[in-house]
Amino acid sequence: MSTLDNVTVLPKANVYFDGKCVSHTLELPDGTRKSVGVILPSMVTFRTGVPELMETVAGECRVRIEGESEWRTYGAGESFRVPADTRFDIEVTGTPYHYVCHFLPAE
Image (cartoon, rainbow, N blue to C red; front, side, top):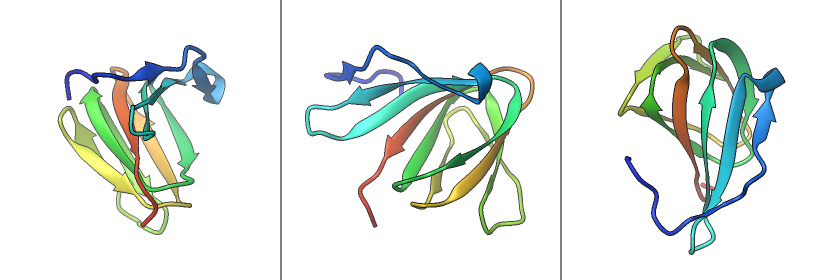
């Protein structure tokens, strides 16, 4: 994804993990939400409320989803899904990880 058209950007940033992750919430005309953000080199744990699709825009990360023992690596142009009400660990080393998080309808 290179652009997001016809969106409303909420101007207040979402700042997590002492500034290691910063994102902005986007609202689309149909009411769906997304966030666009960056994670600086670190290891952090997120918890989902709804299913999410994490799309990698730039950089690289390693991810381990709750219940899985394996870490998986994702780079630019790749994405991963996280079920609702699930924790996932994400590790970024080197360059910052840029992403678009798509909040999906409940399954």
